Image 1 (cartoon, rainbow, N blue to C red):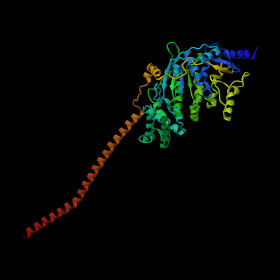
Image 2 (cartoon, rainbow, N blue to C red; image 1 turned 135 degrees about the vertical axis):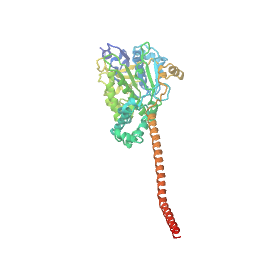
Image 3 (cartoon, helix red, strand yellow; image 1 turned 90 degrees about the horizontal axis):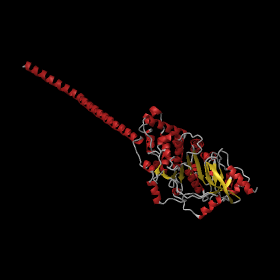
Image 4 (cartoon, rainbow, N blue to C red; image 1 turned 180 degrees about the vertical axis):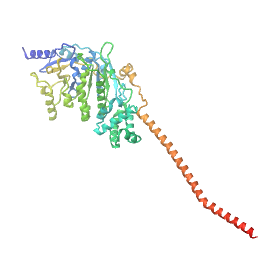
Length: 508
């Protein structure tokens, strides 16, 4: 048996699936594509998370697109975080190309051009379904971690949430939270100290500065109502295809704090909302986080710990997380070790640091007799990748350099008219795009302060009136006291004159 025949048997036996699966492409050996040596990923293991990595221009985005399309066809909803703004074309069929036909002939797969059901979403003022969450939904623990607060400051946040719960003050947006921070050390200082203990103005000042930092990155657009319901990410079409939900993030890529805040709150909400999943054979939802380094580079230690915990736990809910980034070293070791599917496009070795990163990357893949992993990482062409997946029993499949299949949808953005037509047809735009600003902590505390101020003014006026009255009575009393001697003197003089008058008459 030739080396190529041995390799074909090695690959096909390692990628045999009894259940449903996705075919990524066909294996390569010595620079040539082995037709029909298909690289398959069982749907059953796709909630075990994954990584798509590689240098700019090597095909990461197209791989993401291929996975999203095939998941949709299998009835699995997808959420894409579109940082670069180049994924909306999934809604339209591929225009086709002779190079695509050539690629698929080598792989041994037919090419079927088609568009997919897409929902466009936004965290900002861009067109799309508005995604929001309330401060209350975050809760004190998650909010403290996002703000990167100290233990003392986190305790203050917990007390504030308790006060708002006890006094039925809804915390909906950032202005609510800022108002209660100011209130607890100013107008409501005595009330807080009596029932909840003294709160330091230094602590609330530090928290307020962190809140303003989030606000400056657009958090005021994200926090509020109407809150997005996670169930709306799980929709399928009448013909059973999963919706591909694309969140447009092109205008917040320079605001990583907002991006991290949104992602962590979404994952927490998904985990809280979805039930535990048994052995259903396929995931409930797959999330692709493009430019994942934006999260990890700016995340605090507490935030990284929270992400690592969620990555470990959320797969039990049937949810898979796929991180898309330039280098695997962008992803913390604790998260990287949890990723079952790894698709590694070419890396570039321009510097000693790059070469060291390539060696480290090679160590993350199973050993193989057919490749020098570190060497092949630098020689892969565009649309080629090293693939290591998990089989149906959770074991790593044989490492394979793979000629990746082409996307079935358009590899370009929608035109303005196409985008508008998509939004006009969206039921979720109608559901979520009206801003609601109902009475909450901000308004209720302002009313409370105004009422207290009005009462104080009334009491001050009453006190002033009493003071004036008392002063008036005091003046009258002093006048009376001053007049008494005069009256006495006048009375005495009158008496003397009367006596002398009588005596004069007697003497006469």
